[in-house]
Length: 342
Image (spheres, rainbow, N blue to C red):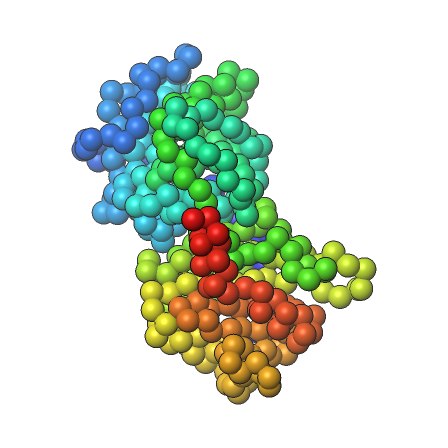
């Protein structure tokens, strides 16, 4: 089976979520999560924000609603700043159910210039597995994560003045927000494995939906891993840094389910759909770890069942590397890290 690794998902987080005309969208007000200034430089917003929820999100954006509903989406607050008919700054504040969901949206594309915003909430520094950036700017678009908020601030015409306004609005959004750490699940990803494999931090993606997974690493148009809002998952490539002339990249996928039973059922479903030509069973000598590996079209694929967690590695150069990588990634990694931090 041929798989396609997409090096960037900018099309998913930018092109597909270009809003439709704001006219006609419900202007029903609820209590706003973010209070933005009435004006910023020469730009002025309307008096009230438009509130978008799951019932009308597809009326607001063309084809991009699935992206937000795939995470824990509560609602969206939209403000439009205008200076004249052709000079607009659009502010979209996505209020998510958890900080992890807001982080997940930022993690879909690590491209852009990192931006640092000051917060009135004191936050102790913690090392990160992912890039430490909480905001990224490029081409007139600012994307930021602040607690349970994911925000997009976009100048339709980029100038020095509009960039300053966009960044100032980003500061207003982030100023009084808590800055929690990245999802605990990312701790399952070692920075390196063995002497040959190094984590690509700028390709880490955190998600809950097979639609998002397919934008990061395509598996199937069907939900063959039974992903839903009760699951959380992370995927990232590891690059080979040796001169052995072997495969340059492998892809690691880690999924945590609500129960061990769901994890086992999901792995069975994955095998039946993705590896139906291969017999089930476990590798000799590692049966207690519930591991298996298979030589398929584009390299060795290995998987492991570890309680509530499923680990899958793709495109390995040989069985030994697949087994080595699988053995270093498990649910116990999260538990060890949490206990060490207490």
